[in-house]
Length: 83
Image (cartoon, rainbow, N blue to C red; front, side, top):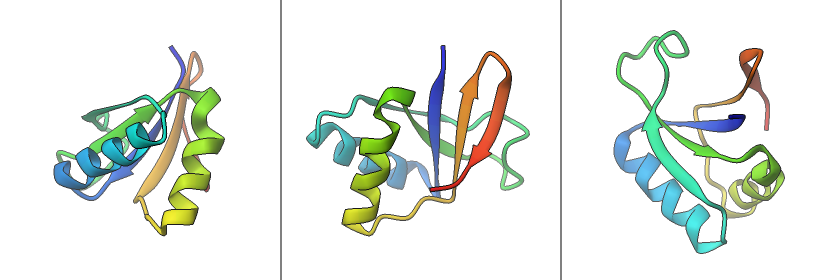
């Protein structure tokens, strides 16, 4: 299943980001960032559907929320995307 992962600085920030998305009707789940996508050890990300990426991106921009990195996942694997 394709998804977009917004890498957060901490588990707490990931949970907050998930709540911000939920308040705007953007379904999101907190999960561990897959091994190999980070050098910081255990990292967290918020996953959203690719069809909700633009709404999530605009919400981050208007709220001034920053994320560490953004990854798109599909049948071809992970690739980093820019906001």
